[in-house]
Amino acid sequence: MSNRRLKKKKIISIDVSAGKYSTIVDEIISLAASSTSSYTCVANVHMLVEAYNDPLFATVVNDASIVTSDGMPLAWCFKLLYNVNQDRVAGMDLLPDLIKICCKKDIPIFVYGGTSPMLQRSAEFFRKNFPTLKVAGMYSPPFRPLTPQEDLDVIDMINSSGAGLVFVALGCPKQEKWMASMHGKINASMIGIGGALPVFVGMQKRAPVWMQKTSLEWLYRLGQEPKRLFKRYFVTNTTMILLLIKELYLNRKKVSV
Image (tube, rainbow, N blue to C red; front, side, top):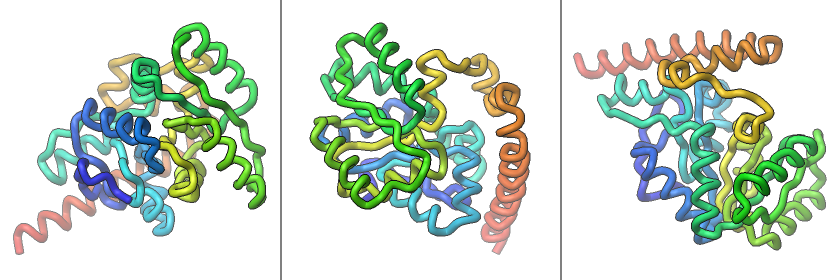
């Protein structure tokens, strides 16, 4: 079920929510405060290309209540395709801002995903830096598909915790598929945060601000994890450029007709 207060624009293969950064944050918090079963996809080039190649995954993303423009390329697409100035709504920025607001509004959070050491570090970080934050629970699932009974146990664990906002750290596309499968079952607002949590709690460094603003944050991450990310970035970035050129060509062709 889509959020009616946020309009979406089609960016090649996915429908991305349009609006100011603050407005999108407010919408996520509103869903969390009311314990509305919903999910937010934080979309970047990787997610867009995954959706282009997999129609079923595209449906998962497009069924989300909110889809944010995590990367600058998606924000630029708003301008190129619709002449709309769109704020970047990055997971790296959303995570700390949502945590701060949850402290103020007394909204309990739950963290699902990540390794046990990362969750332990996160718990220590929260206790030290956000002493008023209500951490309803954390869970590191096994690296295999869960059984139906385990799925039910997870649903019960999160619902009984009273969490209003669930941060899902499984990576794309796993976390988006998981959130979609839990939509209507988990009574909370879910948001896929990918690799934002280890950066937030100090296990990894974030790119300098100038790289963030010039759409080069991916290059910084590539330098941190070249073996894991080189092929993904090379393929997805090249594909994105080609898809955008095709989309611009088709749009101009429609206008000329």
